[in-house]
Length: 183
Image (cartoon, rainbow, N blue to C red; front, side, top):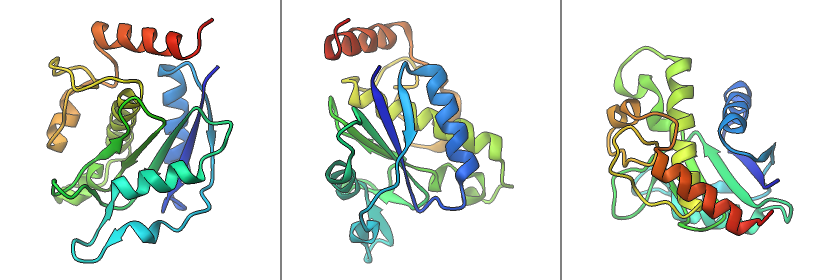
């Protein structure tokens, strides 16, 4: 069974959120999922001119720090992420690779002046985690607006999609994982 390491980054006060994510991911993906503490300093990814953290640099740190036992790594951060060509990202992943990172920062309703909503945050985090892991499994953005692999530029688009894969993406993942680990 493939192993996924969940790596909290600035999430010390969010243990319940991480445990819920772990449980939800285990319902969707046929993986062994473990929490793994990082040994790197994420401050090296901070860009002072933007006040944000560079997700591409964070991916590199996750890869360099990864356990030999992990087939995949998912960093879960509480900080605002960006890539140089975009104002922000909810996450980033290596296409057909091992590592992904997501941020809860812009998934929190209170960032938009709304009351905190733990259930909504959990739903959004699950969708974005599955989305980024889908990229690790070789999937690109899907035209089906309900598929978890549909692109989300705004948080409202995250809310509109499901946490599941459309039939086409589900079949592609099944084939990908079978090819990666033949039975």
